[in-house]
Length: 121
Length: 121
DNA sequence: TTTGATACTTACCAAAAGGTGCATACTGGA
DNA sequence: TCCAGTATGCACCTTTTGGTAAGTATCAAA
Image 1 (cartoon, rainbow over the protein chains, first blue to last red):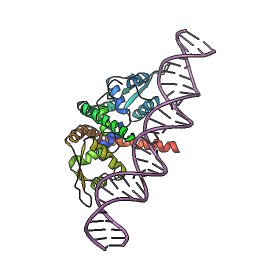
Image 2: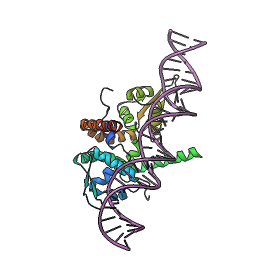
Image 3: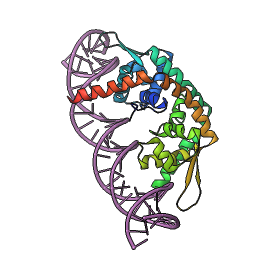
Image 4: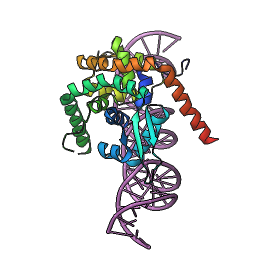
């Protein structure tokens, strides 16, 4: 590889928000800062390990800010950095596309599920 | 879950282009229709299995069109459907974001690599 | 003092994703 | 005839990903 990897810029973006829960995290942090347990409850079906892991990566990538209040019992707040805000902004059109075509996408997904069931049967 | 899954629309979009190579495929097909081997060479480091698999999913989701010329030796051409075009369009801002911040992202990625190396040492 | 809440780590295990290589079918060229 | 190139399928194996469960530290409430 001559260039360190990215063909499209899309690759670069995907390298940052590629993780399974990252878009969701971005989404939930876009409105306001949140404490860990708070965020976990908001997303719902994330395992603890995943959420921590993804948050750490996002933090390492400068997308989210971690504010440790050094209190007992522990209190930590997560929020988007300015950089994270720009990324969340770039995500919006895709979000709009998804919202616009959600019905179709849901059909597609249920079809996928159906064919997988059919495979088993 | 009350709703069949999607919180943000982003999820819906990600459900469609979530695959590792799908954005790249979208990107390469955005300009013009391409034959299989052609596309494979264009992307470069995709395994045959992955490309076929992702293309099949995209085809099943109505994102790409597969045109089989029924010739011997085989000739097949892939292109974006109208639906696929809208998705590719929605991907553009993210692509732009990636292009704009590519330098930073590259730094981030090499840092990731470095920390992994450090972990081994 | 035991339980529970907070945030987080680590070890272990299952499942899914992804890669390699072989097989197919057919034709044209060496 | 045998190999190459076309697109694709299939089986096996490795790597990555994700989940579960337990452990750490500290204080408050029961």
